[in-house]
Image 1 (cartoon, one colour):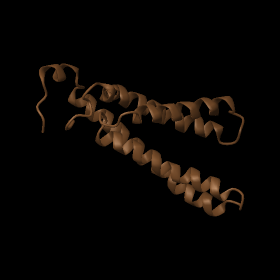
Image 2 (spheres, helix red, strand yellow; image 1 turned 45 degrees about the horizontal axis):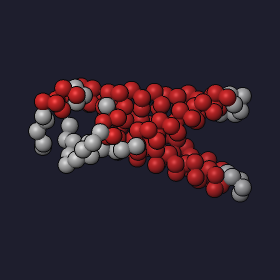
Image 3 (cartoon, rainbow, N blue to C red; image 1 turned 120 degrees about the horizontal axis):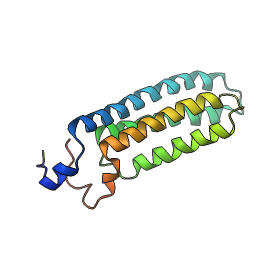
Amino acid sequence: MTAITSRDATTAPARWQDRTGRILMALTAAVTLVPFVDGISRINAATGDQVLMEFWRTFAYIVFAGMWALLAVAPRQQRGMWELLLFHKIAVSIQAAFVIDVPNAGRTLIADGLVSLTTIVAYVLCRGWYTWRRGALGPHDNR
């Protein structure tokens, strides 16, 4: 474990903030596995021209769950991960709001809106922007 300098100690998130943000990311990762499991049945029920699209969408849940899990493990060592997740989830939420009359748009708005919110809260609590500081990806961040 590396020592925290006085400069780091005053700018690092409090232990409760870091832990809360990490728990939020772990929960978000776990919850993302639910639509993955549901997607397996959608793949099996899909018609020939929809199978690949359902497969792609279903397995994307594993990618997102993995990204949130990586942030739960090392929130300040994943440069750009926070921002990519936020960009995608906020963009999908906005699009769902614009096409709210389309089937499942309301469900998508709620789901992606909630994971956007949990990711924003965890980003602030864990100080995810610290990955962009010089030396942030140094030896280890063992909090």
